[in-house]
Length: 299
Length: 273
Image 1 (tube, one colour):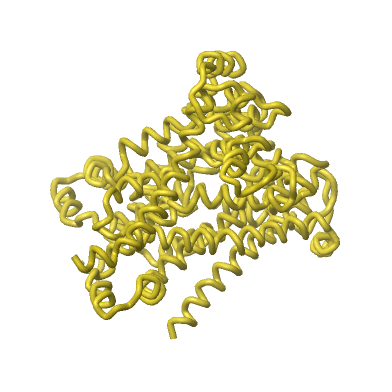
Image 2 (cartoon, rainbow over the protein chains, first blue to last red; image 1 turned 30 degrees about the vertical axis):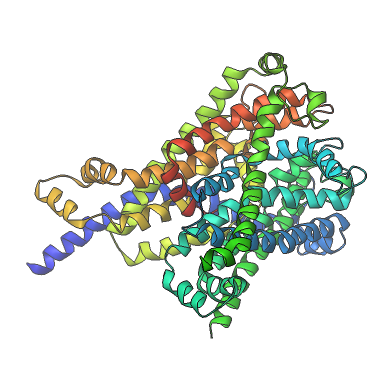
């Protein structure tokens, strides 16, 4: 009796369980799992357009001898290595300053700094392209203040084009990261800071010795998100630098290169799939590395 | 008194720094609004005063762009994606949390791994799939791959942990079927979760760019994001017109932000790019 009932309930639970999760799992299998396996298979194929044949590791060999790929990889890594730390440090400083309840108008400051998050990646890229035009508002302001003597060629010089992409991404995402840190700071006992203050610990030391260690899990989480985002960078570069990857490919990213290989040049699906797997491997490696480093430092 | 005099310099620094950052964050918005009132030539020369070209810019924008159609396209894609994603993901999040089984837990963990898959690695197979299905240049092709979202399922499952089990028990005693419990009890009780998830999905769908850029190839199907991008990539873009476009494209998300600020931040905190 008991057994029969339990079996009955078990089956009843199970049928319902599967019915509820089936649509989501089916869609994810069809539009995520199947394509990602297909692109793995494709990365071992070579050929133009739809006529492809097995090529073994030829695509991987081609990667090493492809200066444009190396360029795109270097650029993507540069964005990641330079931009992510700047943005995270800036967001942390802003969050700890805005966490002070005695700061007048902090709600207003918070909203203002968060506001860039409502813009689409395309819209803000277009705005930045106009603002950083040769005679645009940024150059004319910098000249008026006397910081620079002649206009900076933001859009046409390799170094400055890269700098512009970094400035733009930092503008868009700093407030977003700040929100995570503000939420985490709410959970830190205020008395820790009071004690440190009474003991005469200076503000900067309170930041590096209290705030950063306590926020480590959140910092790690946001670093992983930002890493994955940066490695996939496309919209900004495509819209800031005319879709080609900027002056002499200075801003070209891996995603943009894949797009170019597939939709701009003669389609070469196999090779493009190989480049896309470079991103897959990098995302997995960096996420793993960041978790590993954080765990090591805990000991 | 003592604290006041020693704190004046740090306070000055704090207000200066935070104020500067707030100004830099808001400045492009001001520039966008001022830009819409100026002629293109003045905008790229860095003019920062309101001008008289607003009516001309708006008129030009409406002649260059079939505004009702473009907005209809964006709205259609966004509404379809949002409604379907919320429906499918909340069902799954509820299912995973309420009906536990070992097999489903394994599938759930496997599903979370898909969060690490970059879109760049999916776009070629997806493009070929849509081509074979004859869906290139349709809005269905834009929406379909976005509905099954591991992240939104995760978000709903996490929130379902707070769903009181007494409500389910009471409903069962009253003889409600499982789908009725979900529809008539879970959905209304969890409306704040739906609101936060709505914002994540709405923002993503409204601003989606790379995938629509690949799939939507005719002017009749393009969304506002694609239109702005192509207006701005002209050899000599008319920045006055571009500014009108960016304002119109940003207004819906800005409105959602100001009317649902609390849920917006909540949604952002839970969202993974």
